Amino acid sequence: MTTKVNLPDIAKSDSLPISDMRPDSEKEKKIFSLLISNDKYGIIRTGDARLSPSPIRLLQYQAFDKFNASGHLPKVGVYHFVVYQNTKAQLLAQTTGAVAGGLIGALIAQSITDHDVPASTQLFDEKTFNAQSSDEYQNGLFAKSENPKKGAVYIVFIDTDIDGKKVFTRTIAPIHKHGDQDPLASAVQLAIKNHLDHYDSNAPIIVTPDVVAAPAKTTAIAADATIAEQATASSSPPDAKIMVASVSSAPDSSQMSAASAAVMSMAQSVATQLGCGAVQVNGDATYITPCSGYSVLIDCNGDQCRPMHTVNVKHDD
Image (cartoon, rainbow, N blue to C red; front, side, top):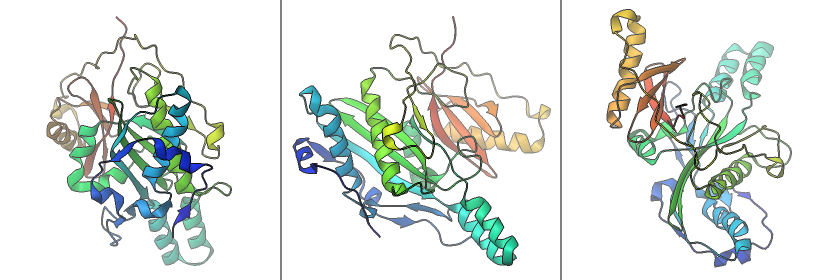
């Protein structure tokens, strides 16, 4: 099924030059697994055909709308624009409900299906994204801290170069429908808007809510807000000093439980694959590892750890 997005005067945006340099795979739909016991179950790459106009054409339209008033239409290069949907918890709940049957089964399924999640956009690191290419389904996973109730979500990655400035963002948005607006169209248009907003700042600070840091230029909206009602958080001064968080050496495994030591070892393995340093415990099953000029948040769940966000932390002198 294709969702049509109504855009007024769309032909005007044809004059903005845009180059689609994405891998062909990002344009195609893919169901990563139909096996309920598989870690990939419930995660789908949506593909371009799900929206009309396509995501790239929506980007061209919104970029034209943003830059046209300045009298200069920049050249836009798109290296990544891909959408994943994660409905794993909902599908498992429906299966559990079907097994339970009756009113109890219906309540089990409904309790998970109705869970919602606020939408947000963060800067992302291309190196982290590429490190997951061999297990692409991991791009459709989320951290417990950003979606604690495991609501169904779209996760949108956009990587562009506009007049020589490269920005890579990751947006998480709810699949739960609000009003008449299609959730996928809302998620993609929100992701584009927030992505383009980063071109208003010369030096945005990359942060994650899990780290105590300077205020970031990031956008978070209530799940039932319309795009017109979205409020952008204030950005830090462009001359603010940014320093990478100091990282202590990993704790002695003898002071931790065997399970904690095993999880930290998995997190360290991910950090080593990224070319980063020793991991530091950051919270509930999350770790921070210092890389070159930034740090990376690593989230561990069960027997898997994966990189989530780049993190720059500001310290007081």
